Length: 90
Image (cartoon, rainbow, N blue to C red; front, side, top):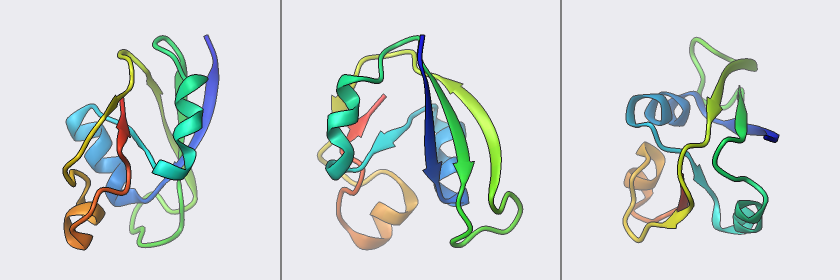
């Protein structure tokens, strides 16, 4: 079991918790080779656009599936921009 520090906006953190899914940006897709089921993601909320959890460690999430690639926007910021920003999900 490994631990990985992941940073995200508060909006995307809330979406992750509500929907039980975490996504990696295309540029960090190589990390999916290291993050495996059973690993833990230590979530830090960044300052940008936050209201309640600014600059805080907010959760430890367990990876329970293998990676898959999405082709449609899912997270709130992706939907606003009309493009996939986090194509690799668990």
